Length: 420
Image (cartoon, rainbow, N blue to C red; front, side):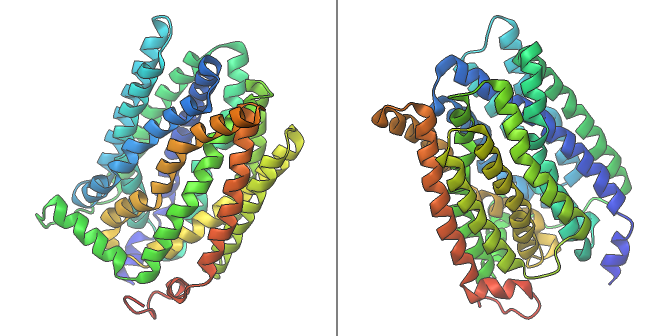
């Protein structure tokens, strides 16, 4: 009761922090879109685009566990400021190379990797800060808004980037992204002044902290099983994420790609706003399973046609399911982990649940190129075939969420027993 009273009135601070992350997400989306188009125009290969995405993601994933430990040991808001501010260095390097006549694939890979290393500090600290700021009753509403901020890179960035690329080039997108880093640092600094630093007093080693995070996750079989299923889900969703752009660029230009991505991402805007206003009122496990089954079905629809209109419809419906799935995953996990272990637990959860993305980014581009060559229809239809297969697999895997009793019990954390 006292903890909830201490957190009363913090939702405005959360909104300020969320606004900073929203701006950062838009800036990052501009860079991601611009570099993707730049690489595809240079190489014509889905594998090269996938390599950039992999290098932007892998350092963040590998460092998420120690970053989670740091989030429990040190000032979480300060870590967010360091992560956001220093991640701009990699983008500055890419911009510098382009201003000297053009950036090679290796130079882009290096810059993206440097930016990702510092970004690794952000996610566990941001998620743990939400727990510091809000009461349990506010988690579901906050999760919807966090999902909306994450979707901004798909909602706003593509159409903005597509338009800007018709009047300028990728360097302008990089400059805008660099400017957004400083705005997010300021928002974190303001929030930092308003709340106390929640750090642990123990002087345990990193290994001990990581082991404790693993123990927290394993304490409830349902949490561990949910993380394992999430890893399989991210594998198939990652394939969609990386192959949607080469699929469209194979028969359309960058401006059309930007408009299409924005229309598709409007699905996240609609459902994210619904969750932000109303939240969820229970049935989290059922909602999670059904939303992911639908997501897989809409992925299948996305891979069938080579026409913008059905692609937009399927993409819109696909993205509309994601905020519901993310909100349910967040709630079921967060409410079954003690506040003092949130940082290290989220670091491990982020690492384990996103291993599927690593596999997807490593193989999907090469698979699309290979399928396109075998069929003689090009990389676009190769990407479509891989997306269609991944969607069918996602729907099947998602159905498993509705079965285990240990996952069902996560909706009532006080009544579920350890290891049940």
